Image (cartoon, rainbow, N blue to C red; front, side, top):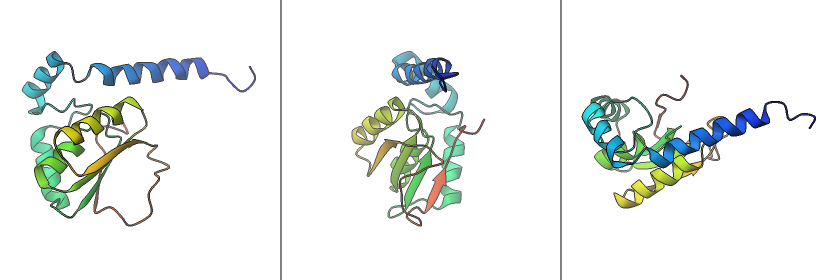
Length: 140
């Protein structure tokens, strides 16, 4: 088909990317994450718990603040930051499966916020609604 060069390759990469989120919260991976990063959030970034705690302090996260986590994957560190500081978390990821996983964790932990599939270059939010923005291992 004209104009479809590389479409099959993109579809394959997207399928692999989505598959990662379906296994990231399996018990063996969570145990390894807990040992290496100090968390069990289904981490899709290499941010450690101590680095996330530093982010919370530097960004001044607390109840009443709104955090945007761009490229949140399964929700690490955005869900943790909201859980540990009481801020509201809005999580976005280009995938579909990542936001499903993070939405489940938000609900499980009783955290104020939501998760959606969105491109970091075209976010569906008005200006000036976030107090802080995080982005972990998205641009690498």
